[in-house]
Length: 185
Image (tube, rainbow, N blue to C red; front, side, top):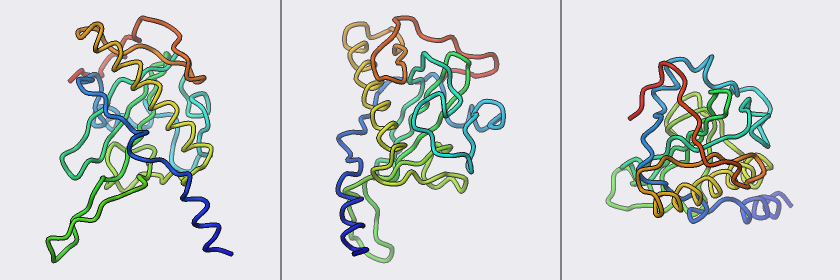
């Protein structure tokens, strides 16, 4: 019975196609938030997993202000900023891993999402359970913000990504100004 449950819960987990990378977003990097994590990142490890931006401490509208793929096998970070200048960091594990002591590479079919970390090796990361309400919320937010940012980059390459409310429907054209002390990249 446990095996059936395990198969069922992982059958609907995120896949790599649902987690696009938005190139050319250099607004905020995880290091910027980690400098003052207690103030800038209202959702903390130990809090209930958020199922919307409000539960994560971000006020609408929310925008994707940071996204980058690391050259470690394909892990990605996403940084959302609310209109209250608070952030939510999400990252994935690597798309593939080298097997220690051999030349074998293992491919990760179903990526894990992590909260409160810019990289999956961060010791303070919080694993988001497969097919949880939190994972579904984050995937929707990532996909919607990424699609909107990519569309904007194609039509107006020099304009930053647009805001996106928790519903997943774009709300406004103007980006939120960065708070004082957060340097752009």
